Image (tube, rainbow, N blue to C red):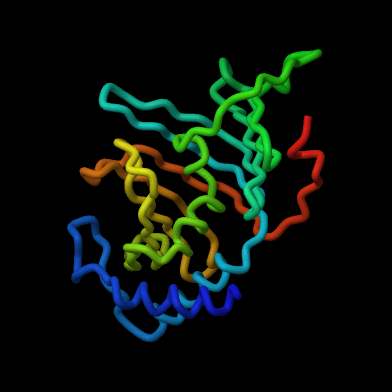
Length: 215
């Protein structure tokens, strides 16, 4: 099943290349090596079933931004756990999705009480597993290349469903050498960056104990 999805997504991505350069320093795939890296990256994403990451998440509004340091655990099946480790005044805040319910609590508070909450696009969109699900829908996606001082990055783009006023497009930067994600950016319908997830450490397909997603 995943093999067929992979083949179709590769084909559609090739058909949906953006024109030479979009003004952001990104361009089309330029050679066989870059196409090979793209295929490897796509296969890596298709085969991902879980991950653990240390990431900075920045939410940008019209009047400023909020930046959080986080530790993320997630499964492709939808379960996730995200703990905020900074700044100090919100450190210890944890959100857990066990696949059925979502709760929040503070891990630093003794005798902590979990509070049920509703899922929001602003929270769920920060996970790589969410991006993969959107990407594999194979609708209006594109692939680009960014030449950076640190090396060549493949940039995968997918539409964020739901007609959210601030969350329209997701772009994932992946290192061509390590095949690891570098950053995930969510843009609004006007192309303004609204959420930026920067990965500082990333482990793919780790074994995640069920206890991580329970209270």
